[in-house]
Picture 1 (tube, rainbow over the protein chains, first blue to last red):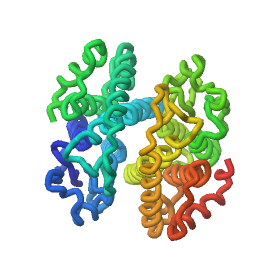
Picture 2: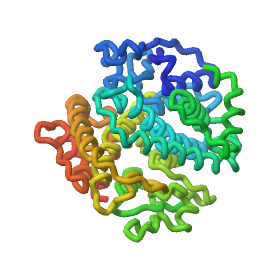
Picture 3: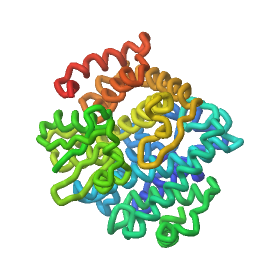
Picture 4: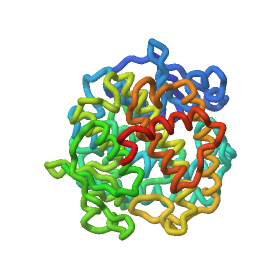
Length: 210
Length: 210
């Protein structure tokens, strides 16, 4: 089994953290996004969407999309489940992971990819190029601010993102906040104290250094 | 257990078809989107994102987001699994369901919601209003055409969306094509013969009438 990834890709980082939290030992194969290696014929044969990460199993099956890779790893290695142990836990973790993706990750990406000088003609990741749309810079930033406020409200009454224990949903939020406040240059507002407290606490985990 | 849904909502339809395919009997509670009932205090108390569907369990737990609801139902009622029986099947179904969502459903919605006269100020579903952006009408339509071409290529060599058996990924593609070609007014191009053949075959299932 081999994980094709990029050290700078927040989507790759989500999987690397899951692997570390579960204590798995999986070979990493770097893909050089700076050199556009994801668009090479060799990589497209592995993942036709030309995005990282991709998990390739020993039988050659290529699994793309972060939720699918994480689902595979949590099902194939059920010790220390990070996607939940019961149907209800699994559903709530899926729900919160998805909300963080739809309202958080997508918003940050919208604001950042439409603004980045290096991503002209690449406003959406994937195999097909789409031009940047200036109006989406402000919308993405507004949506991100709204997400911060909504998640702050949620974290004021929840120990972890999907309840009382650390899960995939926490990995999602951690990677998204680090990306938003770093490359995305969208700091968490000062009044989002519960979200900031969760971010600081979670950043202290050993896996967060990855 | 009760499913809050709307008869005209393609996201609600995805869950209704899953329920029918699994042979489950679940109480349906209609939410009147025309009367904006999803924004009522009563419904927001169930689902703060103010979208349908939501599955409410007998203990009061409210599960939002279609993938989370489907995951719950397939885990709680494991007979006739539609999300896969092995880790590999589960991963591949998750991957294809997600690709259809990211590249198909999101594209159709982008083109349609930014064009609809009745959705001014509501270009994105959810609790927060966002203005329509005219440039997204064309982009959404272009992305949908690209999705049709990509999925046609895939369906030329695959019996069902995620392999050899009917799954959640087929339900996703069926609902998306019916919505895109109906309300979205984006017909499948004539040269997408494999995609059209799959669509016609799958539309013949009893559950597709829902």
